Image (cartoon, rainbow, N blue to C red; front, side):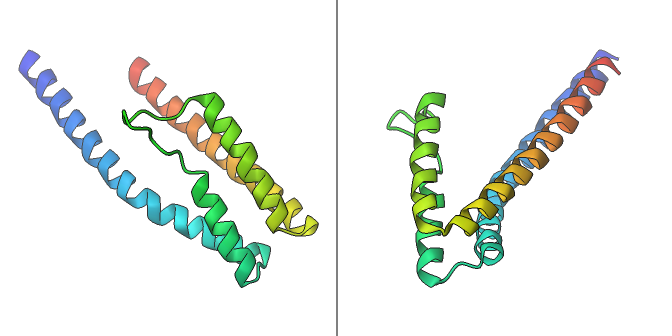
Length: 126
């Protein structure tokens, strides 16, 4: 019985590691698709699109020399800086539409995260 449980735990660990690796590779492609969709939905011209893509790439967290992620405060500061750049690139109407798109995306992410946490809790207590 003990060996079966240990085998199951090892199998789950290996499976989750493989899934995480696949998600990491898929993440960059998904991010590029989302940015392209935003460019299309916002109706940006070529210059706006180029500047917008550059600003969105700036928002990506850069790891420092010790390979640590930036702190929450650093990320919030960076987000404000990039948001100001984006506001200067877009027209008022485009910026309002951009903010609405971000709110919808954040709501979807939160809903997805809540489902994941619920699933994880069910596994723990089920």
